[in-house]
Amino acid sequence: MAYELNLPDIGEGLTEAEIVSWLVAEGATVTVNEPLVEVETDKAVVEIPSPQAGVLLHRGGPEGAVIKVGELLAVVGGAGENWQTETSSEPVVDPDPIVFAEERPLAADAPIRAMPIVRKLARELGVDLAAVTGTGAGGKITRDDVKAVAAQPEAPAASMPTEDSSFEGETLTAMRRTIARNLTQSWTEIPHVTVWRSADASRILAAKKETGLSLEALLVKAVLPVLAEFPEFNANFDGTALQISEGAHVGIAVNTEAGLMVPVVRNAETMNLLQLSEEITRLSSGAMERSLGLGELTGGTFTVSNVGAVGGGYGTPIIPYGTTAIVSIGRAEDDVVVRDKAIAIAPVFPVSVSFDHRVIDGAVASRFLNMYVDQLESYGLAR
Image 1 (cartoon, rainbow, N blue to C red):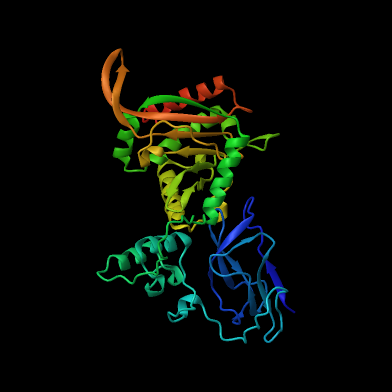
Image 2: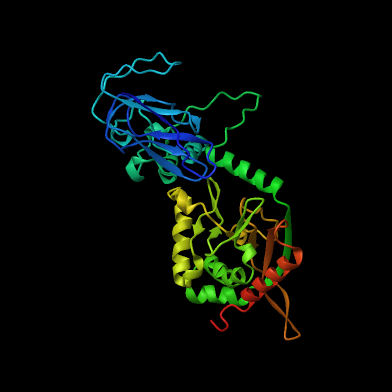
């Protein structure tokens, strides 16, 4: 009997997903738990497995289609079973041996395994993805593959639309739509207040140079004792109840080509500096590659955003929905500082803390910021 597989809720607050790549041909045989399709959610690219053994009788949409949670994604049934949707009159394809996209010869109707950001790059560079050999996992086409073809003297050109005077907007990816929705929810529902200070960055930058570790790891290490002193900053808030977290699950803002992602360092307070640096490097790389699981992108209780990495300075960072605060550190630039009543020139960080005024008062936020600045300026002392 045919099994109708609807798109499950595979993420916190997930409402829809974009079909990235079908891994099994319609009419091909599948086994239990064999990956059927890759979908892009607001957090990651996820493989959806087959719920039973049988034949893939129906695909719920083509690659690039957006379907909502609960809508029909696929149908798996017996060989030769005559199943079709109420709105579709297409005959069921006779079963063939299982064929994955990466095993097929390049053809006009062969699915191309490339994520939306890769497809967008190909359009921008005028590269025909059908002529690109993927070197990624499972034969996926990567950005480097597209760039390599584009760099060739005669790159295969993608068909371009005829230019006219009208403007055609580009549909946002599932991730970009979710970023827009979440930021709108955060900004409209959370009463944001931001406080600023500058911090002498001399010691922490010297520690970075001495250890060779990531600046993000040093910034997180410096905030951990501050979170222990001010637990309301390391918390989740649903609008009614404030839940103080026992562990510091620190989100790290990562700027990727697909959009801003915030992987989470679990129980950061239990890690030494080297472990923190290794974990942040792993998570940042995974965010860039879109290879992180949903569990690595959810559950944060506080966020550190190093906007200085992209040239940023002072700002008003938006609090990730469900948490109470975020700290932003800008690019260090030489400025005048006072040391022991003497004027000196030193690298200075712009530091911003945005907080939810429903649960944190301004005086408490100022004390939090002052302690964090002290941690940054005294980095390496008594450690």
